[in-house]
Picture 1: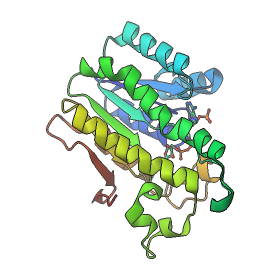
Picture 2: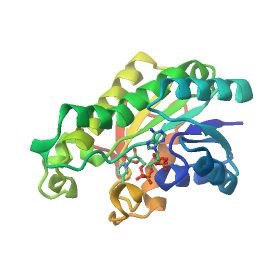
Picture 3: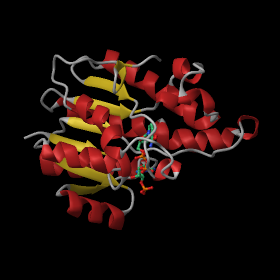
Length: 231
Ligand code: NAP
């Protein structure tokens, strides 16, 4: 049995990732911050619901305790929950705006990873997938041929850059766990008012692929659908 936790699994890429990993035989804990939305999604998926607000230390700790009591260990963690940030012109973004976006997109992923590390360390061939973005790639956001070049977002873009580095640091510190960051590509979800050209099925592909890597698979990398992505 493979036990998997996905944060922000009640909709969008997290929901689709949960659906596919359940199809692959995983026992999925569908994490959501809202109990009603989470329970409804878990029922549709055939997943176990776990309440987890990644900005709240107590909620994250309680979720880890819940999974520990039920499953005893964790094999796959998908840090998927994220927010779009404040959507302001670069020069108008405040320090507080940055803090609020990082609270979810960076600190949240660290909070969850730290709380679940003991469970992952007792998992078999443990894997962590951090859902970053092409908007976090310094290379892509400076390449005029890429759509990422056109998106200016001080808080969101830099939060995803930070998440890639966080992934790399964990990978070096925990060689027994496969830690990778992924870019799903510009995908139609609530995050962007469904403006993305990619479907959630397409976007979730790379998340699912990296969730299924085995003990010989890559670690400390950043991947999109085409393979290793430029940082
Ligand atoms: P989405 O449909 O808006 O889903 C985001 C999920 O994160 C929702 O389940 C949301 O829960 C949850 N969430 C937000 N804050 C949370 C918190 N504090 N605690 C727990 N859950 C929280 O967006 P999505 O596009 O699927 O995004 C999933 C991930 O993909 C994000 O990390 C995003 O940055 C990344 N990504 C998306 C795209 C894209 O084009 N869509 C591209 C690159 C990367 P609620 O329903 O309660 O709000």
